[in-house]
Image (cartoon, rainbow, N blue to C red; front, side, top):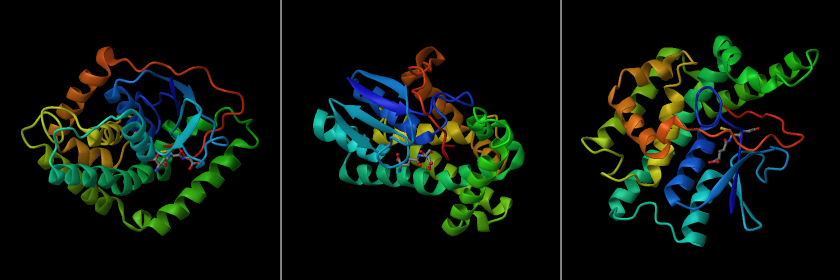
Length: 251
Ligand SMILES: N[C@@H](CCC(=O)N[C@@H](CS)C(=O)NCC(=O)O)C(=O)O
């Protein structure tokens, strides 16, 4: 049995992190039995979630989880796709993970209102005297990361423009198909769904959500993915938290 280590459902989403949601969707797509358990970042091999445990083997990072499912269990998430289609699918996936992601992090963690409504919940377990200090330190570290990565150098309208281009690209790749590359979901659909539902989350205001709202085809796509992989709007709570769980910069 595979165990997926998660942050847990949050913000009305299957998980606080789009990378965890992606891994959850890949496991659902694979048809393999799995359980979800709240992870502990201190025990995560790469210091981030998700990771899985499969028959004693630990695999960290959503892309390596995918590779593991392909190599160990013979799952071909892109069955039926041509090499060119596989290339497009992979490129869209990485656009979400390495471009759109940072725009989302900026909105959720950089904006005070969004932070209070969302990520601040991760720190509620801390006693009051230290909580603001920890929040401040983690947000400062994220701001530095976002500055170094470049996203924090753009004002909100510019970030909205970049996000809109990502969303239009996804819409145009989907075209008149049900899913990203055809009438059946492929591996990249796990990523696209995870990031689109995160971007459209009603809890967070900002340029990313506004840009997503300007492309209505995206919520239709998410509706199809949700109906297929979370029928009954089910997002089961994971096994209760292990001792020592601490939140990190999960978004
Ligand atoms: N490349 C990784 C990214 C995972 C990732 O960035 N996870 C974030 C949450 S969205 C995390 O665990 N952050 C905790 C931290 O940095 O302390 C993957 O694909 O799994």
